[in-house]
Length: 436
Ligand code: XUL
Ligand code: CO
Image 1: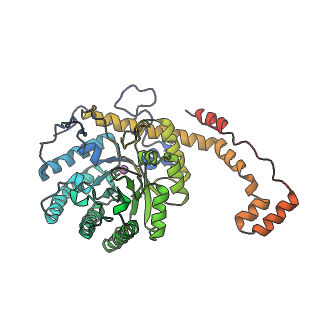
Image 2: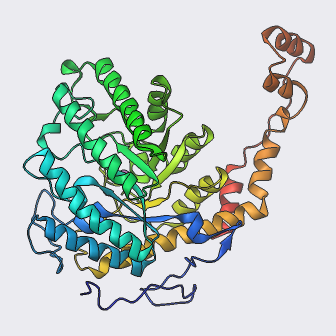
Image 3: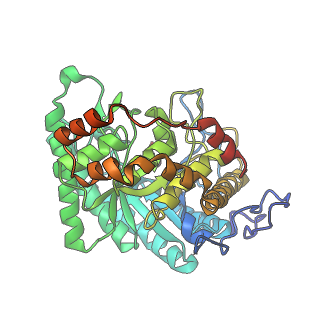
């Protein structure tokens, strides 16, 4: 049985190709800065949007009636769906995928039954991983859909919700490990607040810190040594998510002494909602050595919610790739397409168009970023801009030799600072355009 009979393996045909089911820029074996594009980009297909989204929205019923779905939420249907997912990923040539526990298998009427359902589907995931060579980038637990998590999971006012979430993450971590998952993600779900009048913020965050330490403890017990990743997002579903942006997440990790095992999974549309650029979030996490992985998508700047669209803008992907190359690559994380086709793009073939466009946009961004770096004009400008720190008083400050006393003496003697130089923003923006 094939779910995509009209689609062959997607191949690289080069920039002049007019075939929509081919790559123009993503040549997986081409070497860029010493690695293949496949190794640089580590593309991942997300299970939830690509195989579970059905196009429904608050105003209307599903539009995506997939021919491989039997209309039930049964384990059999879930196992069949896994075969379809792997046919898709194999034809696309994506080396990784990512899932939530509840995307791949249905919740049962008890925790024990839910765990059995998950095991039954994981059996097929394992088989299909072996058959195709597609690997698991990360797993995560859905701690937000079920009404039991209405007040949050690890930050719930209800201690039982914390306990249930712990049991769920324990199982999901074990399954992720059994499937060779390279990372494990925590996106905050409902960890946040709607109103501070009913919220004990300190208590909630202390609980979240304790939860993360329990996760580390269990990882050690079962031998999972991949990274844990926290995914910043400022709002939606709560009014304020505790993991609101990279800075808030890093402060949380530092406050609860979690930086040894944790990194960040930065998502483009979440950065936008936080009032930052993706480049800012990547630079901020990267310079602190805490950049772990990315969720690749884009928002709509006219809308204030999480639209999770596929990224196609070369300027965006170039900025992202400049940051990933600057910080030594994204592995063992990857570029996970946390993106969904629009409600109106309801045919299965649209899943291919969306991913091919996203992969090609990143491949083009990688090529442009590498060219910018090879020419070195931009980095030379930045280096020159900070030259006053390379010797003299700047070097004394950086090395810790100077203090307020010595700096006062220095300025009293010198009288005025050396003349400032132009930041040349417009020249540099124009320079970057040369590479497109
Ligand atoms: C929600 C979101 C999630 C996480 C995984 O906005 O991005 O899909 O990536 O829970
Ligand atoms: Co995400």
